[in-house]
Amino acid sequence: MTFQRTWSRRFATSSVGGRDLSGVWDDQRRAAAERIEADLADIDLVRVAFCDPHGLARSKTLSAQVFRHALRHGVDVSPGPFLFDTGHAVAVDFHKDPGLGVPELAGAGDMIVLPDPLTFHLLPHRDPDREPRTAWVLGDEYHRDGLPMPLSSRAVLRRVCEMYAERGLEPVVGLEVEWYLTRLLPGPPGNAGNGFGLQGEPPRVEAVDAGYQFNLDAYSDAVAPVVGPLVGMLTGLGLPLRTVEHESGPGQLEITFDPLPADEAADAMLLFRTLTKQYCARNGYHASFMALPGLDGADPSGWHIHQSVIGPDGRNLFDEGGPEPSESGSCRAYTDGLLAAAAELCLLSVPTVNGYHRFDPSYSLSPTEVSCRYEDRTALVRVLGGGESTHVETRLAEPCANPYLAIAAQLFAGLDGITGGDGPRAKHPAALPGSLRAALEAFRAGDRAEALLGKPLATCLARLKESEAGRYEHWCSQQDDIPRPTSWEHREYFAVY
Image 1 (cartoon, rainbow, N blue to C red):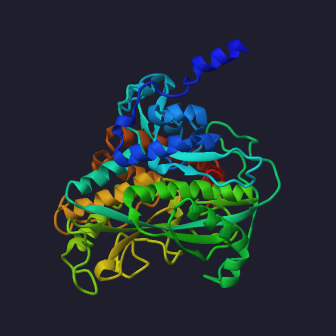
Image 2 (cartoon, one colour):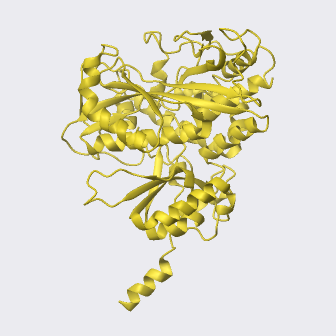
Image 3 (tube, rainbow, N blue to C red):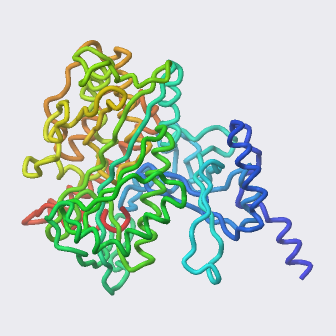
């Protein structure tokens, strides 16, 4: 017994960082951390999560006792999620210097994830008497020496927000997210044939309704026993959900959020997707944010990102005093920037093979050209509202995109337009990339990606996407008939996204 107690004291902090990193916090975070520490006696477990390059939440679960130390010192985490592509194939060689300008990745040594106290949430419990009381918190990645990890996507968005702040501006973002709800069927977990770069069979599911009766109240009512409690859980966690509606596809839903500061919107998107999938799985359903699942009758899902900018006077920069934005104002400059960067940064909003199926004229409300129009849902960029409510809606992103990178890319491009970085009435490409391969080539060909992400992350993303596109192209080369979407895509994305 004495030996066990000594062992516990000696190794109680073996999974947490060695130095206090909380010096990076502002007063708001320090106050939040003190409140968390005061309430830890009522919590059993804490999941410390971070967003990987693919937009997926990865986490490590700590006991409350260990988390008390990790809150300020961080927790040791493997960098594996930065080395694997979407199918878990090793895309970045970690046996030697990976060539990203991040030598710490050699040997896959641990990085540190420092919790952000402002993202701490106590998760709801299905059975409070039997389940441990569990909290969830997002963190930021650091090296063991305390320096920021240059592959952090959350840090990218933070830098873009700082670029706005330096000019007295604040970007505001509203989320409009489409996704699929299906009912899980009995069967194996899909591990047969699975491995590194070899995804097994996706979950077996059935539709919850027939679809193709847009906004039909009967369909909304049919999914209410699942969606109603889900919405209650999400709003209970503080997510500002605004509307829920049934889209065209069978079980295809759309949820919108109130406008938020850009960094909070990205955090909300990650929490929403993560907990929606978990809640549905616990209740015998499957939620997927894959753009076009391999399901009968599926219609593509999009993620429309609404954007506006608050000026130094506290007013909407796009409010130009008339019923519609002018041809020469800030709103037009912002959209010029979006259009100019649409192809070059498309990879950050549409990062999967599957997402490019949306760009097809057969889907009437999906973008097919690089254009901006007022109150037109067929355009890539839609301007809507008037006066103080004027804002921009980009219809580019797929729902499974990394929220930090997708939002950062669009805000970065818009700011470049406002500040004249692309010159007046910047030229823009006529069409969007038609495939992941084409998007990767555009991403590599220009200089915007490196300016936004930094060279290490730009190089890392290119390696990850090269691996993903290469595996898909190799699979296609062995097929006689290639449907849309393919079984490869359904295995690759349906379960995890």
